[in-house]
Length: 165
Image (cartoon, rainbow, N blue to C red):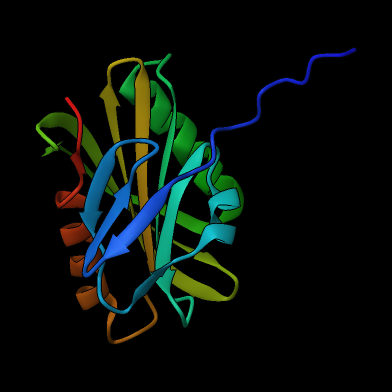
């Protein structure tokens, strides 16, 4: 009788008030009141373990994780290549070092076009133990609300906390 390979662990998550908790991967973060957890969007990012966004599909935030292997700089280059492949007029804007959940991380802002819209985005990479976490946020930039939504994404990323040391 053949042995079946174990599939990915089911994701156990919950939202209480404005707090999203992922019990499978042991982290929590702020969930803006007008965002929902979007299970189908996890397919957009390799290794995606969380996806949230607005119902009008103008703002998204995804969290992914995979085994750490390359340097953060190498991972950022690979991420930028993927973005160049899926976005027209991709433009990296800035990169800086930040701290997320007490861990040094690299934050990279960009602009680009997809689905006939301009988008403003951010990618944050952080290594924790043997895992690399990617936090990817994007909002439509062809709206008067772009600055507000960029701030909401930034607040959500800064609230990210691992629940287990």
